[in-house]
View (cartoon, rainbow, N blue to C red):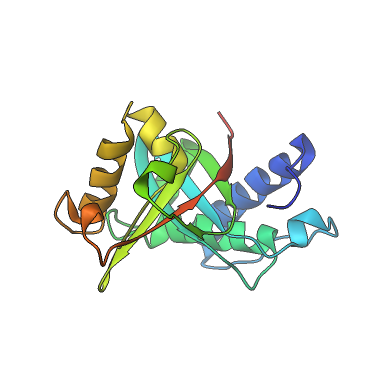
Length: 183
């Protein structure tokens, strides 16, 4: 994984995400302000999570990117606000009260075994056939899940039976994330 983001870089990404959501919801335009910061121009995966009154309002991301990180954050912020299929698109009146969390991801690594998964450190990406599920590292911690529950919930997210992670044709991947928010 690239070097850790400093406080200034995190602030720029949070500001970029918020401005992207507010501008897009009001105008339908995506136009993030470019940066010459080399770290913010690296090609890295990220997830953007939106919460309102502590409740999930949207979360979308990618594991790899062909765009600079700041641009990917802006795009994922807009997607979390307007394209998460679990929620209706954000409206202008919702722009007054939301918080953001950004997870900048390491590359995916295939897990040799489920025992390799460290709760609190790793997120899980699971695939079986055409089904895919992902849970970010902080989800297990927020819910006080052990490794088995984390694996089961990732299966549920993928639309699979809870114990599908035990099947020989299920592939497990782990990743870590640098997680920060504007709370």
